[in-house]
Length: 392
Ligand code: GLA
View 1 (cartoon, rainbow, N blue to C red):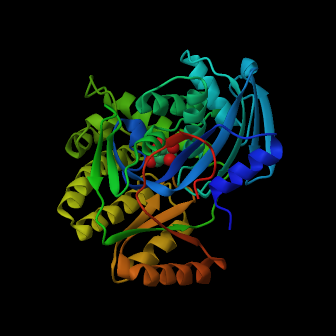
View 2: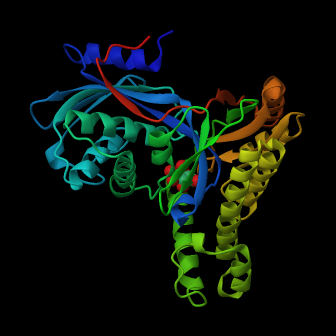
């Protein structure tokens, strides 16, 4: 069967005469732990995964972008001269937003013809949108003849999503897509944007189960969570005047200031503050190769997301519970923004089949349909290459 890279290549040849000159690949990610901490300037621990978005492209002498999406059988066209936030919706908003954000920073881009395809499941919490942004960003920047540090590209892609698409996401997904390292997780400090790679133990597998649940209002619920965190910081300044972000609080400091917060905001803040501590614990557990300790932190993260942050869903809870009951499963939690999407289970390799079976059984019994499973491996971050022949 054709892989995503080959699909992109073929779609290009069918849509445009001749050949592409560049090929960009950007991976999706699974966040091991550190959920809803990135926009609070906290810590995250994602892996880039062996599922990617591919873009093959060539420049145009004018300022028009002509795009085809092989996986949707759709095309889109726009001019770089009239990009305005909100002027495009659906998948074309991501490449358009990237071009808009790059030009806003002073990079003058050429028009292009491009085809895109991917095997990152869409809307499942594995960051297909960041992969799409980053794949277009690296290709467009290369066509423009620029060399841009990956940190700056991550910021520009986040800007595209915040300012053009309208989701106030943090920077984790774009960082993971750019800085991924095979066999490693990435500890990212979302304030300083320092990235440290932490070896991921070979005996552990990351099993992802996609519930198939897609919540239409996920973007507005996400933005609402972010606003609640900002409101908590504003109120907490009555006691801690220099407070920049929830990242700056210890759990004890938050307890001491509890009377300043209505219960809802207190619980939102408690999730973030305790989750940051869990990330630090997870990094230490990984360094010791202590899968049980890591798993316990994943479990605690899910509980906190379910009860304090309220971003889980019954479908995710059923998958998580079923996984945890299996011998060889160290821990399980929802991954990504939540409100549907996927859970991840940290599983000893020999127990993957049993975990999958138990999750499928429990899920099908309760919801009368099956989840989709992927075992993902920590993979390298985004790359752009000339000579766009498919590499297989
Ligand atoms: C989405 C956002 C990220 C992050 C996660 C939650 O994936 O794009 O920036 O906030 O949700 O951890």
